[in-house]
Image (tube, rainbow, N blue to C red; front, side):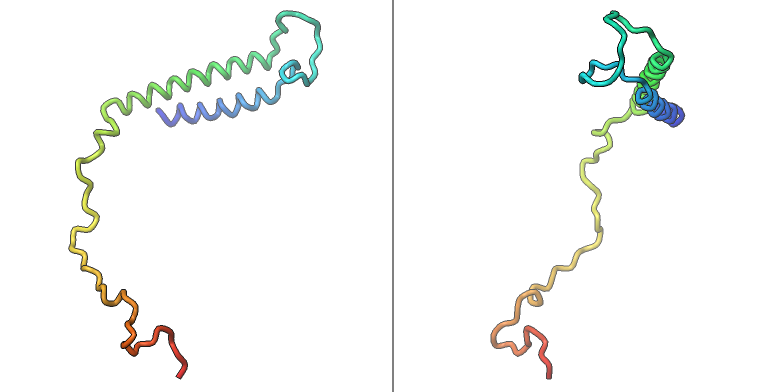
Length: 119
């Protein structure tokens, strides 16, 4: 159910973007664009504006539906309920202690070369 509503929601979003981009600019927003007409208070509704309103309302309805479905799905659980008191141990076995003698550089009396030499 949730996936179907989500797919319809995404299709409506893409269709709404396309319809808005296809509409003719009425001008006045940024002072650019066409659109004449006089000083009428309200322009006539075009079929594109009606389609925009229908798609917009359908988009709002699917948004609210998705919110309700998701809230019902997660009503019994919380993020804090999923946390455990102590995290599980990553390694149950014992870890050997590192050999610190091999990590130190050689001392002056040691005849082990620091860099390989050609003999």
